[in-house]
Amino acid sequence: MDSLPEVLIWEILNRVKKTVDRNSLALSCKRFHRLDKENRQFLRVGCGLDPADEALTSLCLRFPNLVRIEITYSGWMSKLGKQLDDHGLFILSNHCPSLTDLTLSYCTFITDVGLRNLTSCYKLSALKLNFTPRITGCGIFSIAVGCKNLTVLHLIRCLNVSSVEWLEYFGKLETLEDLSIRNCRAIGEGDLIKLGHSWRKLKRLQFEVDANYRYMKVYDRLAVDRWQKQWISCDDMLELSLVNCIISPGRGLACVLGKCKNLQKVHLDMCVGVRDCDIISLARESRNLRSISLRVPSDFSLPLLANNTLRLTDESLKALAENCSHLESVRISFADGEFPSLSSFSLNGILVLVRMCPVRELSLDHVYSFNDMGLEALCSASYLESLELVRCQEISDDGLQLVSQFPQLQNLRLSKCLGITDDGLKLLVDTYKLESLVVEDCPQISERGVHGAARAISFRQDLSWMY
Image 1 (cartoon, rainbow, N blue to C red):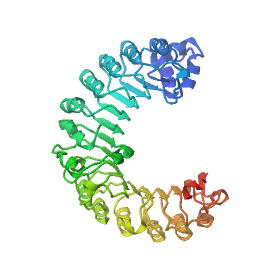
Image 2 (cartoon, rainbow, N blue to C red):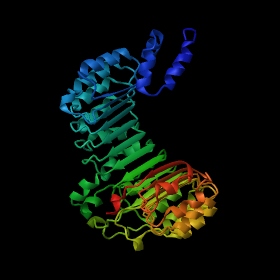
Image 3 (tube, helix red, strand yellow):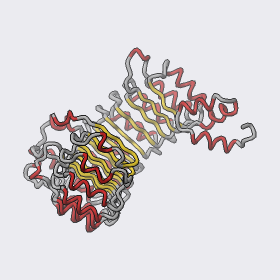
């Protein structure tokens, strides 16, 4: 080992991903210890950091070239010692000159003062905050002003961060490329317009509203009418994820759906107010779309959208099929409580999409319109490699047996399907056609019935969902 060049040892160290293995390797000899000290770029600490300031200082001095640091206090209790506070972030800013990526999770003692300490980290390009309840919009604003290279900002359950000057300031900078705002109760869909020209640079947007908090509040038509229209294009947007959002015609996020020319991946989960015209605009503008996930809400009781047509139809699927020739992944789901007669998409609409696009992954959840005839039609799906059927109660053994005729299928997942038994899998047993088979919570399928049906098998049965 002494004769090995340092470049080769660095390559070996970089291939050891687990921290415990990396530590063991560093203790094997002085040379490895020295090179690991110089080479270590990632550090993850949390509840074991006690006393916090002294331990963090020691680690920073030992590893002077840290680039990415994750501090998480998930499961923390007072008996585990004091959490890292604002002074801890001061230590990071002084001892980690190469820091570019910082994640703080469940750090309940860190305030806006701590974030201001980070403004001296001039190379910081990614900041991710998960449940940091003492941080407000003022702290985020100080980061926006001090960290000019910030391109990634994730805010998750930051309950006291409101949409004040920091959104407008980032809009003027036009530096953000990845913005994730999830369950931050003080930030609403209408506030995102404050990003201004920064929409042009965004490559990834994830916006999720706390559904439980939303339904506790009273929304009226006037509140949504105050949302501004979005006139700025989103040409650089590659991924868009909206969860529990209100899509108001011609305002707010509805404008964004038709302005993403290079969009590749879209996820619309329980977004109330999405109409056929929104999906049609998306399909016509985003011709490079490769993945779409639609989870349709079943609660249409919100009074502010009572006058709108809320049901998506096959027209949306037809537009996707005609315009998105690169579409490879399709996920369609209906929320719990959806009645079979009210399902938005027909069997024919789904099959048109699969026939006209090179769909490799198809996931259907609570889609009552999909039945044995649908599985028969998929026998000609020449691109389909992965199929996921969840709570599709119109499927029987006769339809499932047709899976053995799918030309390219490698992965199959069945979950909470009541109409299929061991007989449906018999034609797959010992053929090893499938690379993987996952069966979860299907009451009439036994562990013995899946044996030999694929090279890799995962079986679980928890029937509590039925009661």
